[in-house]
Length: 215
Image (cartoon, rainbow, N blue to C red; front, side, top):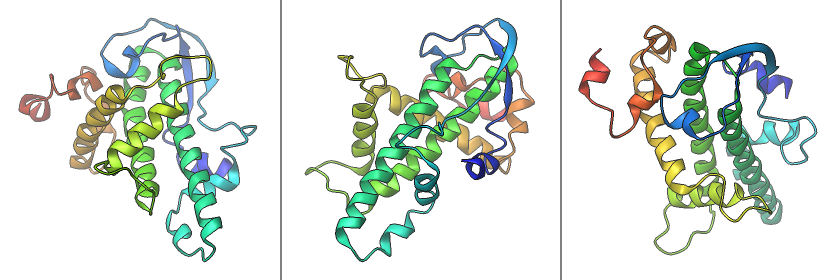
């Protein structure tokens, strides 16, 4: 776990506490929150989590390790375990994106980092699903991954999933556009930090446009 955080130090930092976000507007729109006092450790992995532990984290970072397994049963077991772990990480990231308590400016920066982090783990899950993972006729890897996340987000005592397919698609679309902007700046987040009015909401299909990129 320590190694995981050390390699993502730019994403996991000590942040200021603000009033609690209670809705999905945290990552879907540009609403603001008032600031507060205090601090919290931003974590997506719990040391006590039986599914997401240090050993499995080391394995899921390199999907190619599965290809070298000669035992088909071990291959299937580790593949399913990896998909379960990555799905849980994605859900943890999503939950944290709703609960982070930060000042307005730090909140805006975290929104971008959550988008990119969400996309990174989504793409990693896509890789695992593409490795001989069975799909129904006409089902794509993308739809399979989105369905997997949606089903895993439903708690036993809930009727509907916490994260619906349409919401996942919206987040991914914004994340892809945000990533393109970062790539134009050689993955330097300062291009985001430099403009206080540059909000993730601008990367939705309704808001995106040439003007937003040429500013």
